[in-house]
Image: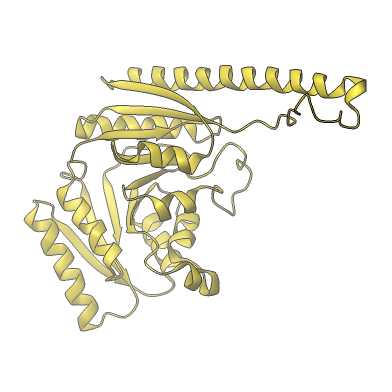
Length: 284
């Protein structure tokens, strides 16, 4: 599998973890890292046409002052973005990453992800953005939009990095779950790691057959995997297993059902990402 590790960095507490995970992926796969920081659009007052009547308040000069302040803020945000990119580059260099590129973009995060998607082997970002550091009960506002639209694997970094040795694969028998297993079988990231495939629900013959098929697919790629069937709700059961068995990474298919269904009964993907403290790789 070719392509860059496209890592999105910001001013959140997840930024260092994003860099550490990017370095880990790069060293295991040999892939280069593309650092990206997205500047949010500014809120400058709209400029009026000279031929139009002067808006209320124009004579006071307040609009000119607001425009000057907005321009100054834009310059400071750009300088801050360049500093974030440079700090991230230094972290990657210290970690031994050989090939690093960086880019500062302005606009919508999702649109920027889509612009880099074609050249990416994986999209890497933190679970929460810089405006959500204290919002521990919900995910970053852009994360679900990105995962739902992205055809590449999305690696969601946890708050802190730790070496990844044990991988838990969530399996529900759906198309996206099989794509996740297929991704593992073809990726150079996972050989040598301990892998377990877990389904949540009843251990029916159909479930067991699906787990055996997933296990065989990985075995054909030289990856030995154990299987398990867990009782309970998926997010709670997977979180409990990940914590008790000390898994370091969760891999799962993303959003196997429609948005309408998710609105009515909730999304297992979002709930599991929220519940699990380990990093998550999502395959759609």
